Image (cartoon, rainbow, N blue to C red):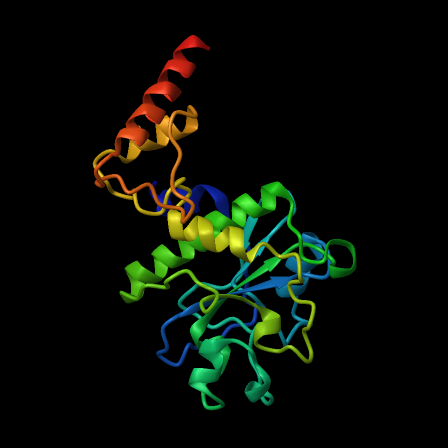
Length: 246
């Protein structure tokens, strides 16, 4: 997929001259921080473009219907994850590694998700989940193209605001936020097995999997170049026969 073409079609830039932003101080984005908006997407857009707001912003916002809005360019620093004190209380591994001298805003990209914690506990709608999966993927590719840096998807690089500020933001984005689904999607790029990306038979394997002809191993691999045992060959043949009978 051409993610840059996808972004042009699916991301609407709505930031204006009132949207808060600052320099990254020559830092490279190394993590994506997820938030819950605690309000509607319309109120989020209004706040992040208001001259009355002199305290906060985010790079992106994702509505419950799956619409994506951008407020700040990835090259710039949004005001979403900064801490003036208490960094030593963070649980985010990367934040602890960098310490007090590094403002987390300098090396993060922030995504707000429309929702209210008391109602959703951070759970996303299906449309919202699919949109933020693609947005995470786009951000990773953008950072790779712009800075030559790989954001390896993991619990270290795909985090919540509470991982930075657990005292003031303990429910942001919420305990039901689908971090595992997002990280798995980014790791496998939506493929059913984690070891078939760019394999010459990738499309054939995906097609066979979707038709119910093949299954992988419990560790999430398919091992496409491994020798096939007699039992595996019989199981494959039986699956094909069953499929043909249907």
